[in-house]
Length: 389
Image 1: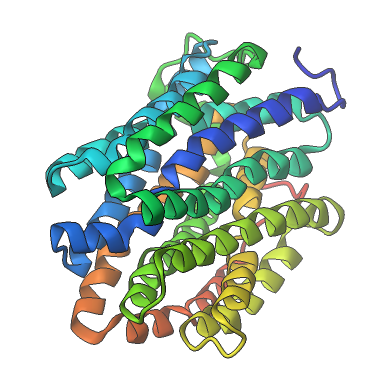
Image 2 (image 1 turned 180 degrees about the horizontal axis):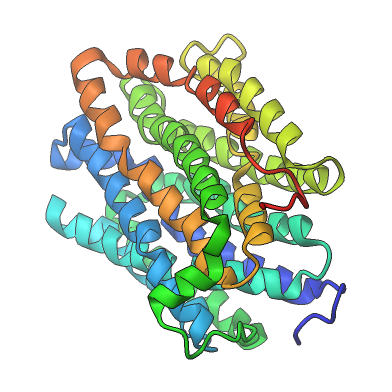
């Protein structure tokens, strides 16, 4: 089933996108339920930030070792076992008797996410042919739409039946996994089976490590801004009287807009290059993040437009890095979607601690202007098809 040179195997790309949807659908349950967890376990804002930080730690920071294993062993264990863990354990959050057990269930579901993402992202590269950015955007849209649909689904379930009903949602995920499992191919052979971890890092990054570090840094800072808003906007809106379903809709619109913009940015970057897309998205993210806090356009319009621009570049980090370092595709993807996303997400307790001191709105208002820094860093990024020298 491997793609012939230059040809895109969209059947495999869509299958991986669907699996991406299933796993992230369940992982998306956590954010909209933060106000419920806050009330049930009497959490501080710093503890709420800890939940997000831990999900990012286990979902993303541990991805590089998984990416290394995925590049060295052709197996479906990671790409199928990961979503399965998320389906089972995130569903159980409503059964948690205390904060510690809640963290355990979220942790196990997050580990499932870390197993899936680097393997699947590496597989996309192997089956994408010449339509690399577009294929990565299609793959990414499955996960981003999941983070749109999942919050709405779990908000409706919990609002109607209570938090203790969440384990029942596991049934849907198990049925979906059973239907798609046979369609998943083996990952493509990267030819790195006998190379150790340190040697793999040298083989993959070699003389391009400075470019990779710069791309990674921009990804970290973008994630820090995006995850801070996703974590604390639900809490802020809950305190101001919005219903759980309304909050779920805000999160859903934010993420679904990101899915749409990721697809658009993939198409535009294939045609015009990476940097124009980065400049436009971060410049326009600033006013719409601000409008999330003072929603003159309404909270739903503001959440859609903020998500559209702040998340537009998510698939581009992977495609840019894999273009520069084409060997070890899973390892490269794990750094851009994993270590970068995780590091940025792990910084949210800092946002929470500052919000405990100065208020959520004050801190997020300052972060809304953070993309100005990103505009400066984008200038130094490599352009599409540019030799890293």
